[in-house]
Amino acid sequence: MKKTIAILFLGIAMLQAKAQQTQHSASINIIPIPVSVQQGMGSFLLQPTAKIGYTNNKQVQAIAQQMQQKIARSTGYSLAESKNIKDATIQLQLLNNWDTLLGKEGYRLNVTPTNVLIQANAPAGIYYGVQSFWQLLPAAIESKSIVNHIKWQVPEVNITDYPRFEWRGLMFDVARHFFTKQQVMDYIDEMAKYKFNILHLHLTDDEGWRIEIKGLPRLTEVGAWNVKKVGYFGTFKAPRPDEPRNYGGYYTQDDIKEMVAYAQQHYVNILPEIDVPGHSLAAIVSYPDLSCTVGADKYQVRSGEEIMDWSHGAPPIALIDNTLCPANPKVYTFLDTVFSQVAKLFPFPYIHVGGDECPKNFWEKSPEIKQLMKKEGLKTMEEVQSYFEKRIEKIVESKGKKFMGWDEILEGGLAPNAVVMSWRGMKGGIEAAKMKHQVVMSPTTFAYLDYMQGDSIIEPRVYATLRLQKAYEFEPVPDSVDSKYILGGQANLWTEQVYNTRHLQYMTWPRAFAVSETVWSPKGNKNWNDFVSRVEHQFKRLDIEQVKYAPSMYDPIFNASKNEDGTLKIEMSTEVPDLQIHYSFDNSFPDQYYPVYTTPLTPPEDAVMLKVITYRGDKPMGRMIAMPISELKKRAGIK
Image (cartoon, rainbow, N blue to C red):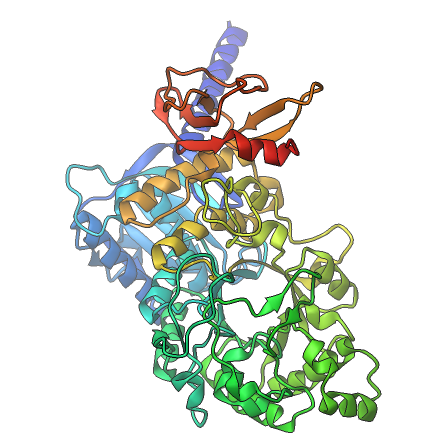
C-alpha cells in the first residue's frame, strides 16, 4: 500500500513538474535569457495599493522613481513609498555582503504571490533586475497611456542572473545621417531594456562632423552639412554647386553632456568615435590644410555620391583624398585639440579612433609622405598608417583614455596598448588576442545590423544579408584564443541607407535581441526555437510601444538551382520552424487555401512570377513576396 501511495505521489510530482515546465515556456519570455530561472505555480498581482521600498542610495532611489513613473503611465497606479523596505510590495535592495557570483551587474529577482524582491551588489544590478521584471508583466505595461480592464499579473519565479561579458555594445552611426539628441536618447531607452551597456557613437565621417569642438568652428559650421538626397546611397549624382547644403546637424557640447547623463541613468556608457585617418572628408573640407593633397580646398562634404573605387577590393582606391595627412604636424595639433575636448565630455575610459578603410593611393603620390617614410624608415603604406596610429595612441593616452580602433590598425604594426574592435570577421580579433591585446568582436558575419534581413527582392537593398538566425549564431570567443582577452561583443548599425528613426528601429530589432542574448546569457542557455518564441512575445511589446521591427524571420528563404535537365529548381525554407509556405504561379495572391510548399518546385513553362506567403495555421505571418521567375533563373545561372 505504501509503495502504491509513493508511486501515486511521484506521479503527481511529475505532473506538477511538467505543468511548471509548460507554464515556464509559456510565460517567461525574457530577452536576454537569464542564467537561472525557477518558476513556481503561483503569481503576483500588482495592485493599486502596492508600495515600493528601496535601499537608501541615490541611484537606487532614481531606479525606484523610474519604476513609479512607468507603472503610473500604463496602469494608473501611484505606488507609494514605504519607509521600511521589508513592508514594501516591491523591494529594491542592495546586498550588505558582496555576492561574488553576481558581480557588479548581476541580480536576484524573487517574485512570490505577495511581493517582488530585487537584490544586487550594485545599482546596475538593481536596474537590470527591474528590466527583467518589466518583461514578466503583461505587454500592456509598455503602453504610453493608461490601460484599463487588465490584470497586472507576474508569474511566481526565482531568477539569478548576471552577464557573460562586460562589453555589450550597439554602434549607432550618426555621421552618415544625423539623428537628433532626442532620437539618440530614445535609442538608449530601447537598448537598455535588453541589457546593452555601451552605445558606440560614430560621430565623424565623410558625410558629416557631428560634435562641437571649441576653437574649431568650421567643423560644425561647414563639416556638419551636405545636400539631402534619397535613393541608393553611394550611387547619387554629385550635387550641383547651387544646391543648398542644409541637411545634417551636430551636437553641441551641452547636448553631449545631456546625452551622457541620460545614458548613465540607464546604465549605458557612450563610446565616442572620431574616425581617422580615413573617412575624414568632413574635417578636410572644414580645414583643407589637414590634407596631403593639393586641391583639397575644392572638396565638399559628401552627400552620398561615389568617392571610392571598390572594384579592386580593400583598401579602396580614393577618387578624392578623404585622409588626414600623417606627415603633416598640423594634423596632430588638430587631433590633440579634438581628443582633449572629447575626453572631457565622455567619462567612458575608451576613445575609438576608427582607422578603417583608409585609402592610400594619394599618400603614394605625396612628397611629404615619401619624406616621412625616409625619415622614419617606413617601407609600406601600412607602416605609414601604423606610424600615425602610434602617435594618435600617445595623444589619446595623454588624455587619460584607452586607445581603440577597427582591426585595420593591426596592419603595419599594432600600437602598444591598442584595443582592437574586429569587424572584418573574427580574424583580426583572433590575431590581436594572440598578441595579448584586448578585443571587442563585432564581425560583419554576425553583427552588422545595416545588412538586409531577408531576401533582396523585398528588403531595402544593401550589399549583403544577415538573417536573424545567423546573428543568433554569434560567438565572441573563438576556440583558439584565451577568453580573458575578449571584452565582449557589439552589433554595428551603419546608416548610409537609414534615413529616419522608424527605419533605424526596423534595422535594429529583432537582430539586436540575438546579439543581446549572445553577450549577456550563458552560451549553454541559448536555444534557437525557444529564442524565436521569446522574440514573438517581444514583438507584442514593441507593437504596444509603437517601436518598429522587421518581420523578416517569417519570410521564406529562396534557393535557386538547376535540375538535371537544365530547368529551374526552386527550394524554399523558413527560419521559424512551424510555418507553412503557400504559393502561386498564376499571378494571384496566395493565402492559406493555396498549395503548401513541401518539395522543390519547377515553374510552369510560361510562368513569370512566384508569389509566396507564410502562415501559421490560418494566420498570415510573413509578407506577401512577389519573386520574378527571371530573378530566380539569374540566381541559378540560367540564361
